[in-house]
Image (cartoon, rainbow, N blue to C red; front, side):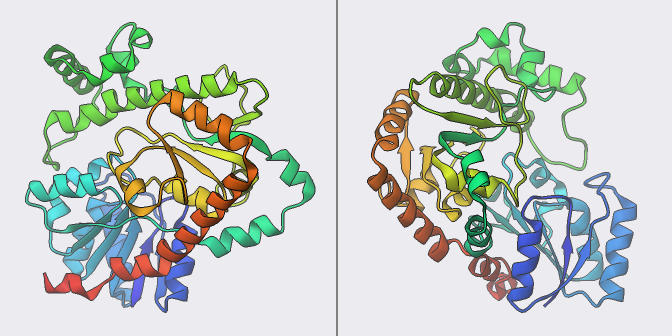
Length: 376
């Protein structure tokens, strides 16, 4: 097919482009900034112009853009989107059910929720990795780089200590709450959160179909759960005696911080050279496998992750990946696997083999673009 790839700045867009081409597709790109997800007339006009001038068969993007649906529908072609963020609020747009859409979503719970609302344009599609791309980079790294990124334990990700921490803006003394308090949402808490989010202009407009809780729960309560879980576990790890811990984040924190690492050039070295790579999933990812987990495994790294339903379904626990269900269990497993190099290396090797065989881009692209969809 001749595909129009809409690029908006996702880390793995170049990887998707290269794999589309190696799968036999012609790729034309559009990278005009989207200024309004449902009403950017200039972007729609540019896309429609490219469709006609370049004889485009279909459009593809990471994540879902309602305005692209409108352009695709006007041109009479398909729009394939591959969602890897959760929450992803554009999935509440009224356009999502239009039949030109083919939306692959990495979290099966999100798929079930949308289907329960009568949306039949979505399906479950786990994410993918390109193991060869990372292996080449890691294999050519210098001894100096290897030493720089070595650690016993590392964590790459956000702590969400920024202006988007809505919980603290809504509830005074939010930092004093426990995870249990955040999980048990009272009617009064929900009403207050909905009111304040509306006051801040953070609820969706008339182009979307949703309940206020659909916005408030992931943006306020589940995000706060994530903040508390990540920060408290990472503080415990940073205080472990004899353990070299490295944190890579752009968030403000009192913990010793290495700063951010470039996704394509430095992040793979962190994953490959850390004895243990921690994954602490966003609570708004209910079942899915975060891209971070697949990225670590594709670099030959050892993953210690919180339990996620789909991680347990797609990987053999303690043989391809190691999971924890509490902070205490995470600490115990860190102590164990730091000191058991043979077992750790064997698990990392098996995890790499698993993603290489079961999470390749070409296979996933085939599922996303499958002609079976056209029979719906």
